[in-house]
Length: 184
Image 1 (tube, helix red, strand yellow):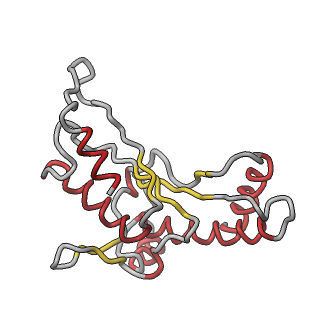
Image 2 (cartoon, rainbow, N blue to C red; image 1 turned 90 degrees about the vertical axis):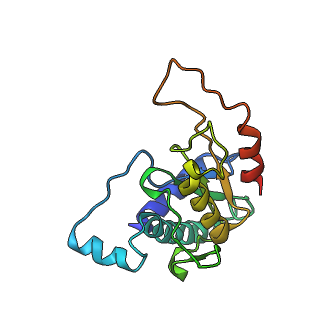
């Protein structure tokens, strides 16, 4: 599956000669296979969907890079690959230590050096700071990704009030601090 996907992804790269970033992976999905075989495989990644997705994406990137580097037309292009941290893959495949730091669940969940995480924290309470207890799971996920791929996190802030569309979304006092935290 990785090789087939990589071949198709490489075709997209060839047909888009001015593009640098290529996104692939899960999107609006929080439902993953729960068959016995998949659950056994998930144990290697600490029962984390994102760990499994990173491992798969790493294989795709390796195969795609081999194709890209073997071709004179594409070998000098600066290509970056992205997968979401979103919905069912929001949690970083890391473990929080007693001292508050994070470490990868295993070597299998460390993203390839050309793989970026597109951090998409849709569940953020934008009326509170990113470090507020309401946003603790989002903040800890961000810290976990910082350990996995520092400098390779893209943030897509869903600054939307999904629950009260007609109510003013008062986040003027919090968004600056969020940007500062994301920059760190």
